[in-house]
Structures are given as C-alpha cells and as structure tokens.
Length: 409
Image (cartoon, rainbow, N blue to C red; front, side, top):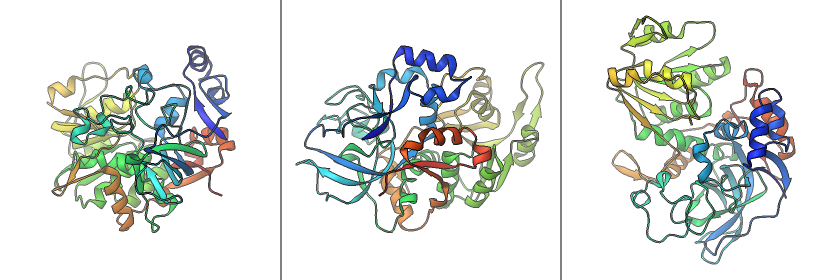
C-alpha cells in the first residue's frame, strides 16, 4: 500500500533545511524527510491491537510544521523513523487481535493517537497516566513499542496517511452512525480545543482573546460556545475567510490582522492602554483576561503575553518550534500565568464529571451541540499529496480550513 512517510536522517534534514525555503516542493519530493512510498500493511504488535482501515486522514498544522522542518529537535528522541504520518483519523475496524476487546470488524471508530503506558505494554502506570494525564506519559520511548508519543510518529503503528494502521484497543472510540465522516475527522482537533478550554474555562464576565483562527483556534471558539461560555470572545484572524468562520462559531468580535493596527484594535475592544517603550514593540496596560495562543510562532507568543492584562492567563495551544525574540518581561511585570495545553487527556473535568476528551467531544457531536463538518474544505487522494501541501501553503487563495486525505471506496 502507499503511505506518506517521514525519515529523519541528517542528510535528508540538512538538504530540506538548506533548499526548502527556496524550493518548498523539495521538502516532500523524496530528497528531504517526507515522501510517498510503498509499504506493507502494519503487523499487530500483540493480541491487544486492531488493524484500522482508514476513511479519512486529517492534515494537521503540526504535520505541516514537521514537513517544513519547523519543529524543534526536542522531539527527535520521541519518534522512530521512518514513520508513516497522520494522527488524525476516522476509519473502520479491519482486523481484531484475540485480546482486542469487544469490537466488531466494520465498526466505525476514531483513534486517540496517544501512545501512553497501556498501549506500550505497561500494567503499572506511570505517575501521569495513573491520573488520566495520558498526554503527559513519561514512557513514550519505552515498553513494547518503538519510540513515538503518538500514532503518526512511531514506526511500529503506522499512521492515517495510508490505507491501514494499527491501534491498541484502549485508543479506540466508537463513532455513532449519526456522526458524519466529516464531523468524525474533526474529533481529534476538537478534542485539542476542548482540553485547552475545560482546563482554562473563563467566567462569563471575562474577555477572552484567541490568537489564530486556523482549525484549532476555530475549535476553541466552538467549544467555548458549546459548553455555554458567555465570555466576550475576541479573535485575531489572518484571513477574511477565517474571520467569517470565527463569526459563524460565535466570536463576539473579530480583528482581521490586515492593513490595520492590531494594537489599537485590541486596546479599543479590551479597554487597554498602549505604552511606548524607549525602543522595541509597544506594551499594554490592561488587555484580555485570558488569551489562547493558537499559532505557535514567536510573534504570536510575544503578542499573547503583551495583550493579556495583569494577573491574567496565557494558554499556549499552538505547537512552538524554536522561538526567538520573545520578551518574557510581561510575565514577570504583570504576574501572568502561562499554561500549556497539549493534546487531550482522560482526566478533563467539566461540571463535576471527569471525561476522556474524545468521549466528551463525541457526545457534543452526537447531540448536535457542535457541528463542524463544514470546516472540512479540501479532500485529496493520497496520490495528490503534493497538490494538498501546495494548497495549504496558500490559504488566502485556497480558503482551506481542514484538508484531509480520503481512502473511502
């Protein structure tokens, strides 16, 4: 079968870093780390695993960062090359190990891609997994699997950018028939937004700023409104189509960061006051009560810190690479709380109940409280991967929100 793989060898990496900015297509041509190839269907690691036939494999912003070699080398010990990419998935069960649980071949499922203690064969859980914080597992390089913190970064499991991949029975969540494939492929990104929101839920009198109106920023708006937040939600968007999507999901105000002074607009909407230092970027007095940073760039993180009021909270949701030029003085001067929100967990608490992120997301979709099928704007066959990657580099023209690879018959 065909698969898009990533192989992090030093020669491939150096070639991509050297020529990728000049000739972007070289990054997925086979000369750098990402390429289309023929591989065998994955073997089940043991009897607790299942083989999944992919229906959709989502293309995440973090995947694009990986392809463009923007991710930090920090992650390199936590992957095993070559691995098949793709951690967002919707599929059907094709094969079940003898101890794979009470599943049936043909059932429609979504896979939580985190490879925590139990998928790795540990009976005694690490400190984090024992609390349900499987996104913080301390053993993602250990156990019966090769290193990989999630499906789509481990050479043993495969990934959803291929026709088949393997999943442990604890990773699988049943998708009701009432949920379309387009909504189902959004389960993973919605869960990212949900985990960030429920652990940093605003009061109704707060002003929330969301920096970035890509898939995750939009999912955060959707989750806030689905969970009945009445907060004043401001969104900083890059493109007009993103601004339109943010308004559709319930943003109170949208700032389109094009041909305007963003500082003036945020000051106007939050009641903040702009101060001008002797040199460098302007600073704020006042600002948002709570800021969700959903881009991961140096500029966006620096802005998130500056736009948050004294005693406020900055939630880092976008995956940063090696950031430069961030002035952390505001964190000290304004006594800010900076909180990361990574992936999803089995310990999200909402309204007195502990949820698995994926289960709460599926509940919201099943009940029709969230409907994001319209965010799947572009569908490609795997053979058209180069076209997909080119389109996603030009979002202003393509108006792409969520692009997916389709393996549906």
